[in-house]
Image (cartoon, rainbow, N blue to C red; front, side):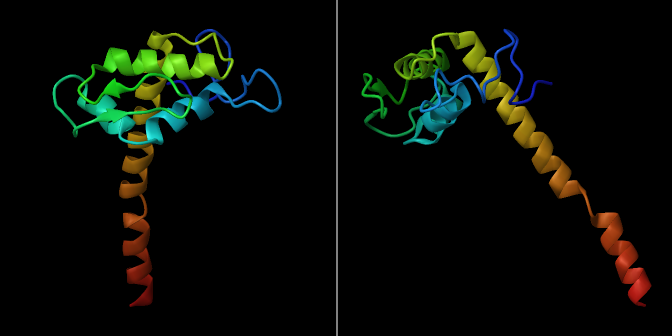
Length: 128
């Protein structure tokens, strides 16, 4: 499994800003996914309509309908990366990174939800 620091092309997602005043690919990706309904729109893919209207991006790029496919969402994120001077990420890499972030989140959530039970039981036994 890849971490936020690694990338197949050897360029880290969290430290690839073109200059000190710029943001990294990871910053742009997270910004895109967290604004408006973009993550929900990505999760829905082309299967469902999330809500009416369009989602505008802070970079001023063209709005896409909320019923757009995942591939279009990837392309929109790549456009946002390009607008920030980050020209080395492809739609395929964006897809891979989003999937990696989701896997990492699920793994951390599962670990958090499953740890500590035995410890709590032992603490209760000691108190008796």
